[in-house]
Structure formats: structure tokens, C-alpha cells
Image (cartoon, rainbow, N blue to C red; front, side):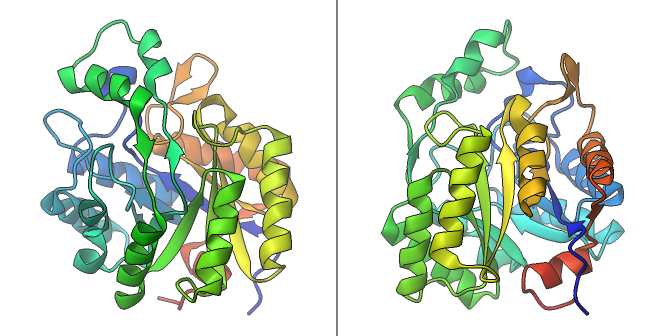
Length: 308
């Protein structure tokens, strides 16, 4: 059955590896907090939950398989239907092998696959934090002034091969226009097979901005390179650009992502207390545009994945 054009996917990125605990007391850190936020986000209308793990004592991003296992098992105990998308971006300083180890271990339906390298600058955020809870936070933010988020062609080929072997569809993360041309190469080389799923990640210092001009540029370039019906796409706007960028995506026919990985605020000066609040706001905005959140089963059909 064809999915109505009014249906759009909401993805929710639960905790990520960008924000540090000192930025918000509501950032989920423990497996219980991350899992419960994912469960509540799904109840609020998210068809996909995007998962990172953190050290439950310090909040530092972690590749620990046991933490991921706890999170996934807790989500599945309460919700068997929501799509789980696991990161292969990991955290700053992790190797490609560490980042990709989650794929053969958990064989998720979806996993992020970063489509190119960029400078990754989080250091300006340090100026807004008066006091740090943990020493690693300040060190990590400082480190990003001299940090390249490295995703070479060899690394991309390796991660895509691991995903293919484990039945996982890559969610191709696009941080700049050149990354679309990287994806075109991966398709030409047979490393990635259409129809593809892409996420336009905007507003990160070092990548493309979140203005309507930038989002339109990504969209029209994708149309030229891949053609209608050959790709699904979603937009992330970092920080205060989260909802304006999402609205732009909806108007152009795309899907959206919200969540505490990307933005800590429900509105100007008001911290979001959980991910469900961000999803609820996105669903309300959709309603004003006569659109509806897709269910997980509808999202699978829209992304070319088998029904569960």
C-alpha cells in the first residue's frame, strides 16, 4: 500500500556525543535514561530513535558494547516496533573499528554512515559554560579546535561493507555538498545500493550552514545526482536552527530529525526536559502544515526496508 504524501518520518537523536553534561541537567547519560528517553520519544511520534552510549558515571561518549546492549534491550522490552538507528560516528578520538563494532554486534535496521571528512568545531560552546561538572568536557571542547572528523574513502568502504554483511541500511550523513558527490561515487562503485537514505546535517562548525539557501542547495544537488524515487532524505538543524531547518525540509518534501543530540532547547531560553518534548513540538508543527508523523512500519516502507 502506498504511503500518503502527508506522512513524514520523525527521527529522534537521544543523546549524541556533542553536548556535554554541563550544558543541561536533562541530557540523558545512563542506559536507563537514554532508553527511557527513546521509549518516550517513540510514544510522542518518533518512528526512529538514534542511539549513542555514554559512560554513566561521567557522561563521556563511550563505545562500550555492554552499555549499548543495555540501552537496546531496555528499549525493546517496552517497544518492539520503533526503528533503532545506531551511530557509527561514535565520539571524538574513536577509531573506525570502534565506531563500526556495533553493527555486527546488534545488526540494527539502520546505522549512521558519515559520507565525508570535515573540520569539527565545538570549541565556541566553551565560552557559554560557567562551570564544568567533569574535567573531560573542557578538554574535549578545546580539542575540537584542531580536530578533523575523519571519514576517508577507505573508512567509508569498510563501514558500508560491514553494514551490507549484517543487513543494516546505511543512513548516509551529509555535512556538506561535496559529501553528496562522495555518495554518488559510492553508488557508482557498487559500495552503496539505491534507494539510499540520507540525512543532511546542518549547522556544525566546519560543515554547511542551516540557512534555507544551504538546505535548498543540498536538495537540488541530490535531485541532480540521484533522481526522484532513488533516495529518501531528512534534515538536522543544529542548535536553534533545529525547527526552522526541519520546517524547510517538510516544505520541500523531506523528513526531519530532532533530539537532545542536536538541540537542548524547547524554545528560546527554555531547556527541553526530555526528548519527547522535542518530538511533540515537531509533531505539532507538522499538524499545522497538514502533515502527519509516519509510524515505524510506514517509515520502513518509505525507506525501502522490509516490514517487521
